[in-house]
Amino acid sequence: MTTELDTGLPSIRQIQTVIREETEVELKLITNDLLTGKIRWQDAHCLCLMDHYDQPTVVWRTALVYLKPKL
Picture 1 (cartoon, rainbow, N blue to C red):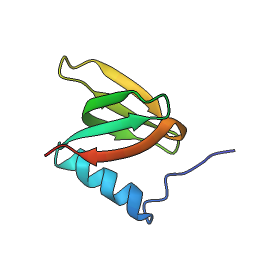
Picture 2: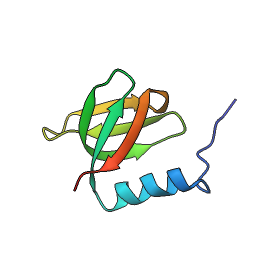
Picture 3: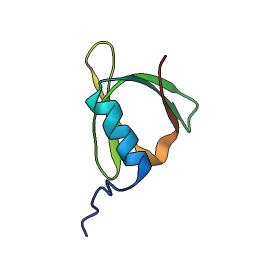
Picture 4: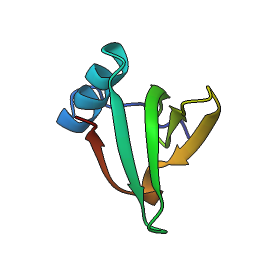
C-alpha cells in the first residue's frame, strides 16, 4: 500500500513553503522536547529536520505537537 503526499492540503503546502524558503522552525514533540532547525524534506509519514550542526533528525508526523517558524 503506497501512501502519497496530498499536496492539496494546506499543512503540506505550508511545510513545502518552509522548505523552499529555508525558514528555521521550532518543532514541539509529544515527549515535550523542542527541536529547532530547517526542514529539508517531508513525506507522508516523516519530516527531516537539519540542526545547526547539519545533523539530520527524522521526526514522525505522529510525534508532532506543533511546528512554527522561528522569528
